[in-house]
Image 1 (cartoon, rainbow, N blue to C red):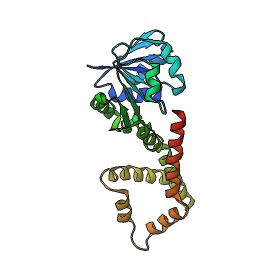
Image 2 (image 1 turned 45 degrees about the vertical axis):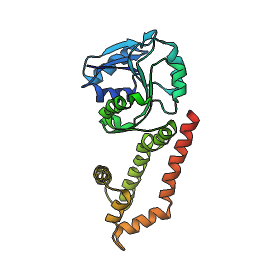
Image 3 (image 1 turned 120 degrees about the horizontal axis):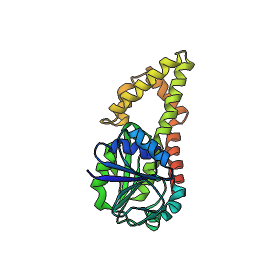
Image 4 (image 1 turned 180 degrees about the vertical axis):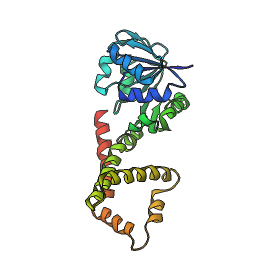
Length: 253
């Protein structure tokens, strides 16, 4: 069984490890032995655990899951040269990774919150020789898609990485609208969740515009609601959100 080594033991590392644990031997490295034990307990399988000080990454497949601001500090605690370094750090460039942590190859990965339920949309870029391995690795936590440049992964970070927060805002607002009109809160939340689950399936095989046209009958309820959304500039606000998040990703890098 292939082994993957997680540098960092936070929520994203745990989410990815849960997706990989049936196909890979898991090793986790961190600062606190109790937190490493908690990580193992959450997986319900036996894993390798090690403290980070003077940890040897030679020829290991490493998934870097620390805070972006801590990369340089973490680098001083490691020794050796990894086989491949996968980084899930937002805005941390391949150049930054290359100058900080020795490895024969580097791949940037951007999972999202849905990794915790095995439904992440993960975007990837880096050493093309590891494209297939990277896609196989991160497909264990949902969908994975390879991009041709770091500019594209920064844009994708704004869409897929930050997207769950935007959709959460819309979900809450739609449920609030139903409550405003007189629906009980519990009923509104249950209906909203069913809406998003069904839409998630539909959007896999249909263009959004066609889905919209299929629901919007002339002079009907959907047309009235859709007109209200356009009047309030929801489309433009969504596009502005992607632009703002992309600019922030560039600043971080």
